[in-house]
Image (tube, rainbow, N blue to C red):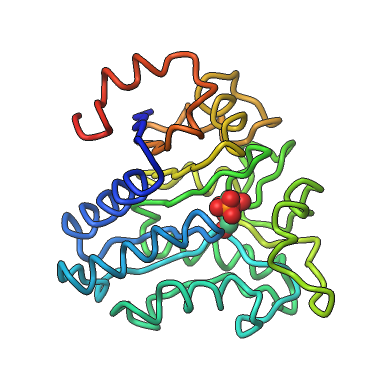
Length: 257
Ligand code: F6R
C-alpha cells in the first residue's frame, strides 16, 4: 500500500487527479472504475480541468461505476448515473457507448449484477479503480460484514451510511435503503486502486483500513491485500495513523516513489 499524506484536500485531490491522468496517458483505452459521493466531486472537477487545459482525452476510456441506488432509474435526479453525467461525463469526451452504469431499476437486480460482472470481464477487467471511503469503512456500498470475496449484488445500506447521505435527499424524495454495488472481490480484481479520503470524519476508518487487522468490520482493510493500492489522504483524515512519520518519509508530500 502506498500512503500519500498531503497537507490539505486540494493537494490530495490534485494528486489523485494526476494518478488518473498518468493511467490514461500510459493506456488511452484504460478501463476506469468510478466512485461517487462528495469526495469525488472535486476530483472530477480536476479531471475536467485536465481535459480542458492539458488535453487529457477520455475518447478511449471505458468506465464502470461502483454502485447505484436500487429502484432509481438512470435519469432520476438522485441516481448515481445522473451524478456522473452532471459531475464528469457531460464535460469530457468520453464516448457514451463506453460508459457502464448499474441499472438501479433493472427488472431483475440479480441478473443485472451478474451481467455487470460479465461486462467487466469482457473488457479484460478494470485498470484503475477510484474509491472513496465510508465513515464506517465501506468501499462501494460494501457495508461492514460484507464478504471480502463478494461480487456485484444488492446490499442493504447501513444506518450510518443512510445518515451520512441523508443530506442529499429531501422530504419529497425518499432515500433508497438498498443499492447495487460491485463486490469487494470485484474491486480487488482491479489492477490498480486509488483511494481518496478527506476530513476528520474519515480518520477512524482510515486508521482501521491502513493499520488495523483485515476484517469485514472495516471492509476497506482488505486493501492491505491488494498489490497496487495508493491511499491519498489530507492531514485531518490521517490524524489517527500511528506511523505517519514513516509514511511521510517514504513518500514525502506524496511526490516521491
Ligand atoms: C459511492 C461510493 C461510496 C463513497 C463513500 C464516501 O459510489 O462508492 O463508497 O465513496 O461513501 O462518500 P463521501 O465522499 O460522500 O464521503
